[in-house]
Image 1 (cartoon, rainbow, N blue to C red):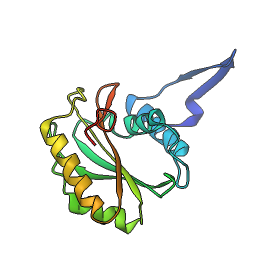
Image 2: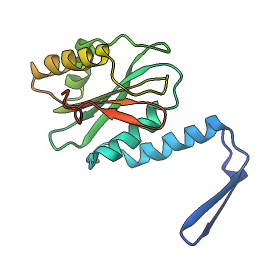
Image 3: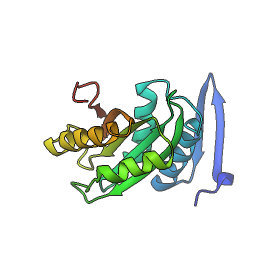
Image 4: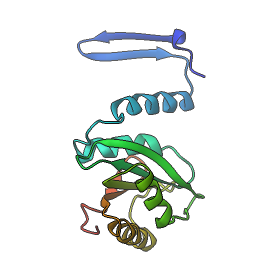
Length: 166
């Protein structure tokens, strides 16, 4: 685990310089902690870029596919984030029923779904498009809006809403 006593931080002209003996995994863990502090319960999702940044930190480093749900209230304030399904290197089984159950449990008015592509290529597959449609249909039956499905790749992402798929 990261020991903050091994960290030397200096600031020069608005730029922070960090010197430390730290592993890659410790850096990732710190990044997740920092981004979690930016997105706390009650914060409003203010931009697609912020959402992408949050999801990249949460999912981008994983070597297996993970399907996650960001739950929001009717003003798009964060209620909860959960990594719901874990898969293998090239797929995860996703059950729309479980997405709806989670959203109802937290009384969400809207959701953003996301998953990573461990291959690094965020282009949506036909299976990605089908599950998006199935989740949207299941959620609409109980008046929950699916705002987006964001696929995270190596350093970049694809929004199915921006592509007109949702």
